[in-house]
Amino acid sequence: MVGRMLDVRRLQVLRAVVSSGSVTAAAANLGYTPSAVSQQLSTLEREAGTALLNKAGRGLRPTPAGRLLAQHAASLAATLADAESALADLRAGRTGKLSVIFFQTAGASLMPPALAAFRTIYPEVGLHLSLEDDMDASYRKVLDGEADLAVVVERQNAQPRRGLTLIPLAQDPFYAVLHEDHPLATRQSVRLALLADQPWIGCQDPGLCWTVVVEACAAAGFSPHLALDAGNYYNTQAFVGAGLGIGVLPGFALGALPKGVVIREIRDPEPVRDVFMAVRDGEQELPMISALSAALRRD
Image: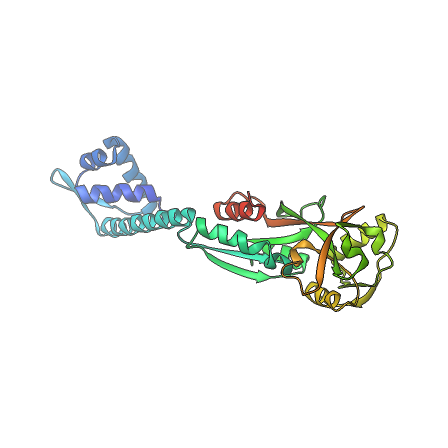
């Protein structure tokens, strides 16, 4: 009865014997002893359930089954060589792809220079980028294999989700966003408590970023109240520029400010959101992921 699986190494021994015509020549070519070659052949014949070689004078001649398996051994050797070459290309960054999820404001500031630095190391790797502001959805996509990694906002002391490793990347402080004519615009920094009675403009979504601001305001003795919900950080800046109120926004959201808008550091306390990379457990040291992680941390 044919075995369920033929051993690849023994198939290569058979191939060597068929190519050279004798056990002795095959043993010399393989660096084995003749007895070791004979043992491998005997075992392979038991696995195959049929004779593979017949004596022919002082040499050996393959049976039809032996010729068939020797041919497949040659194909396997070529396939393995191709696999080793493909693996070497993948490790060297000559091939492969990396699927990355990131939140919106990271895409405006953190991601571009990091991806440019990554490209200098792995110029041939295909990058698949997608935007996702829902942290739970980002985690789920990484766990399900839809993405290789996700850049997320998470609490500093957060427990990693089961199956995921969190790698700290950066801290993104919040700033006071003011019209240039606002009385507080003359200061180098602004105590958070001074913003308590101001008309706030922002986006009061249930996400962690707003929670960070609310908790900082609570530590300063007040609860922020939005006079206008602008829907997103970029609309907030435009509304501030129109003189409709003040904003408190993370630094990653502050690129080219609208005309008439200035930013000031916040203190006592300073709201800060923490940015992490989420990867599947055990994959943080993979070369491409490690390289992008370093670029995002700007190591």
